[in-house]
Amino acid sequence: MSQRPLAATGAHVHSSPAAEPPLLSVRKLRIEFPGRRGTLVAIDDVSFDVARGEILGMVGESGAGKSLTGAAIIGLLEPPGRIAGGEILLHGEPIHSLPPAAMREIRGRRIAMIFQDPLTSLNPLFTIGQQLTETILAHLDIGLQAARRRALDLLTEVGIPAPEQRIDHYPHQFSGGMRQRVVIALALCAAPELIIADEPTTALDVSVQAQIIALLRRLCREHRTAVILVTHDMGVIAETADRVAVMYAGRLAEIGPVREVVQHPRHPYTRGLMGSIPVLGADVHRLVQIDGAMPRLNAIPTGCAFHPRCKDAFERCRLERPDLMAAGPTRAACWLYPPSPNPEPTP
Image (cartoon, rainbow, N blue to C red; front, top):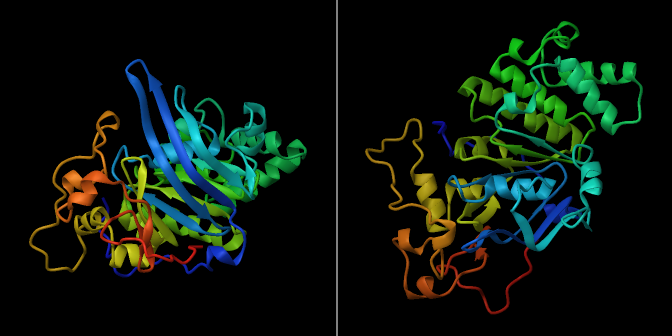
């Protein structure tokens, strides 16, 4: 995990998602995996919005459900996984129940995905130019020459030097950071409205991470592309996102503006995450430790799933599962913040 000063976040300021209808709305999403010994619930009652030009960070431990949520949005759930409840709306239109052919029209053209390892996204037998032009031709009604010109423009936009020469090179001729830039160019081929970036900087060194982060932020600013940034690295979230959603055991533990969640976390799990990250220049002799481990899907406890690891847990936490509730500027699924009798609507 990167050692970055979390207090000085660099995320750009975004207008409130309430200023216009959300680009993407996820409502009470539930994902199940049927098996011989019963059905496992991997995502349970997850709801959030993403506005145009906004970067929403999704963070949590491995197995929390971050990547699974992204895969469900773009229609890439691996069988036997299935969406068993809830809605996924793009511009208010449901896309979670579309047939595969209709979802393929959306995938790539309106929603694109950036995967963690660029080598799994790039075919080693074809040049970068061939892969870019093929993707462009699949989504846009233009000719081969125009597609190659667009491919060159995309390579220039993502910062590939000498694109006229590099366009005819193969993936193995690029460094890891350059390959990730090519994958971002592939995601941008059809000018999608939403990009789901699944751990896009994990395999890169810190200096290259900073370049990829700056590139994603520039795309949001210049094209109003929305980004869901899935990562375990709170340093990346702090520098990139407008808002952050913290996931635990398939549910949202906390969601709110990135500065508030990073500097003043409300949920005990979020406080543990923040306290476990080394901060440059801080005189700290021992980092915060969250005892225990996240429960397996077949052993999620009753009540709040975090209560066996929570030092603030009390009886209600063991019996009742909390929903997201107002906790200052953020919303937290925690009984430390009981709902008010007349809650104000949350944008």
